[in-house]
Image (tube, rainbow, N blue to C red):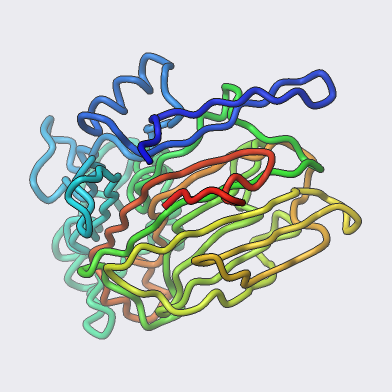
Length: 325
């Protein structure tokens, strides 16, 4: 059955309409997605996916600075189907430290002798103290983009979901066969259910890849600490169908998270799952941490790539009696 790019359903709840969607990425290119985003005609916000950054401030984006790519490609398992591919590469530690750890007010570069003196061979890093960790450097543009490649439902429009109400989400996800998994306690978030509640907050509900496992995390308070649930091993080059039933709530009485993987229910978590009763929004892609952290163990991974397809959201489970694969 052929499915149109958008299936929009307006549902009245307490005199308020909510808009839901079905997305199969039937675009000509990711540039078209970005154009729709810039024209405010898209489901998706692309600001975390595009563009690359001129890290060394030389006026052009050098090849080493093209560290992420968002593209519309053919399904690796079905050439008749278009999908979204999100890629993220690790910027070379030398290049990263030399420019990214410079004085952002004067744009002075770090001296090579300083870099060489602070090189840690066991971690393959130039361990220059960049406000405790390179990822915490006070360059908003760099900090926003360096460790992530994501798209999100536009938070300033109608694709936001109220607390204490039933919301359902689904997607197909394929981990590229070249995707490098970490063996240390470091990984990447690949799906986030975030709160529209200001800057600096943690996603209360997220799907993480950690040491070859899919992990569900639920953070009840905005302190980065929460509960974790194992959702099974990561498999590459196979489509995985995820389904989520979520009721965000700051009270134990109403909160609920249910997760299915390929039709098998793997988690039912009742109780508080957010620190505020505010609207939810949805992010997917790759948010990677720990690549340049001198305080962490050596992290050998350097390339991440994930495909997404047939993403949907509704106020009920649309898969009952209907195959979305």
